[in-house]
Image 1 (spheres, helix red, strand yellow):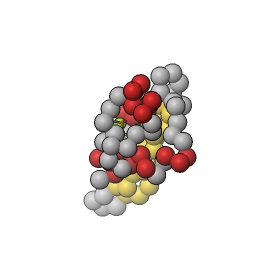
Image 2 (cartoon, rainbow, N blue to C red; image 1 turned 180 degrees about the vertical axis):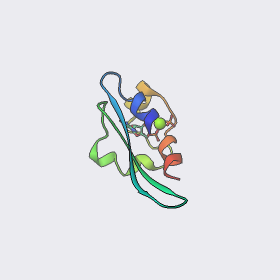
Image 3 (tube, protein in one colour; image 1 turned 135 degrees about the horizontal axis):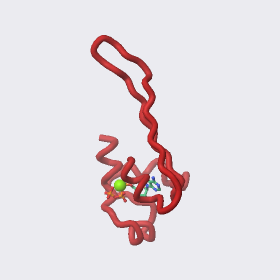
Image 4 (cartoon, protein in one colour; image 1 turned 90 degrees about the vertical axis):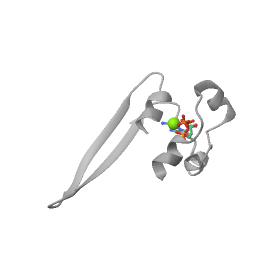
Length: 76
Ligand SMILES: Nc1ncnc2c1ncn2[C@@H]1O[C@H](COP(=O)(O)OP(=O)(O)OP(=O)(O)O)[C@@H](O)[C@H]1O
Ligand SMILES: [Mg+2]
């Protein structure tokens, strides 16, 4: 996800936040969030981009490259 944020943000900023939610004797629960000021993801694509080989559009793929597998792997 960090890699995507850097990839789709030519100018601007990428933020990576880590928040400690809970600590137990032998575990910690951490919430991670990534935000960027890049090209953004249209609302109607936000569900499908997690599917294999799904990319924002053919134009985006031509310009930025990639296989459309990154987010599928992240989700799994
Ligand atoms: N931070 C982001 N900003 C804008 N669009 C994004 C961002 N992250 C993902 N996307 C969109 O979601 C699509 C799917 O992302 P995914 O990481 O699965 O594939 P990819 O980056 O195109 O290729 P790969 O990760 O396999 O090299 C991207 O092609 C892009 O259209
Ligand atoms: Mg990717």
